[in-house]
Amino acid sequence: MHNTKIFRTSFVRIYPLYVQKAEKKKRTKDEVDRIIFWLTGYDNKTLLQQIEKNVDFEVFFSEAPQINPNVSKINGIVCGVRVEEMEDKLMQKIRYLDKLIDELAKGKTMEKILRQ
Image 1 (cartoon, rainbow, N blue to C red):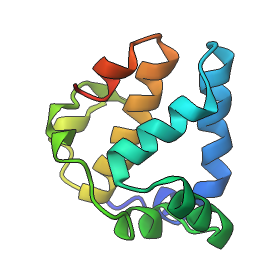
Image 2: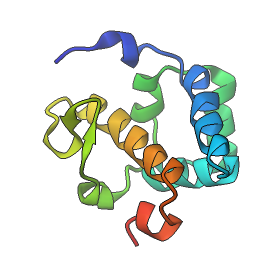
Image 3: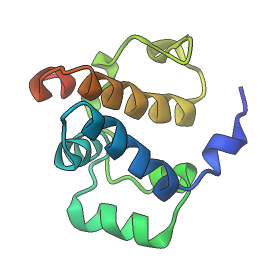
Image 4: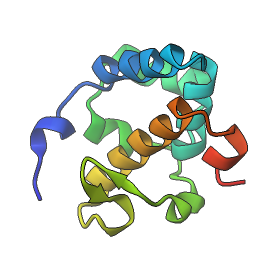
């Protein structure tokens, strides 16, 4: 599966959509950021740097300080595909983020979302 269109999509283009999805369900931007920090190892400063550099998803994940070792606990279906069975590792990371934002919008607690 080679889906270069999403890989080349600017993270800054999708990030506000994550925030908007959360806020529609009475969740916050801070919670979206906390999910991103947990998943990627970015912090507020480094996330802002990535946004300012207007990086695409491929660069965003390749420059992530550390993908959380608990990502293996993320499972379920996103866009009709089980995230834990995806072969393309970059697509899997993108879908992990989608799945976590979906869980936030569905009202799950941060402890459950962050697999604590």
